[in-house]
Image 1 (tube, helix red, strand yellow):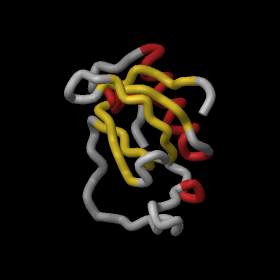
Image 2: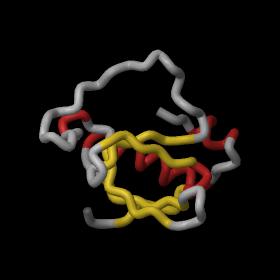
Image 3: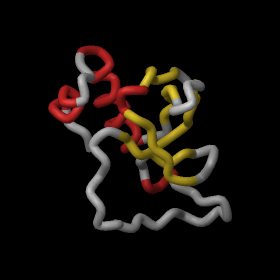
Amino acid sequence: MKTKDDLIKLGIKGFKADEIMYLQGKMLDEAVRFCFRKKDGTIRDANGTRKLDLMVQEDGSQYEFKTSGKPECPTTLGYWDLDKKMWRSFVLTQFIGIVEGL
């Protein structure tokens, strides 16, 4: 989980930092709809979570969390994409905001 200090090191401050902190916490409990700018400049509207109970794979089976032993990337936030049914991530500095209603 990213801390406020992690975000400040990336130049993310104020409301945007608060919203990312809120997003991380909310995704631990439920599905959240949010937007970010992709590397190609297009805007991605994502439905994501970090709650294990909501992570259902393409074949309908429950995702089993596995540790890779690799440290978490400091510039991105990983999430389970509920539409793609797989892990995805976005660059924190490209976060746009949370969208109300899932």
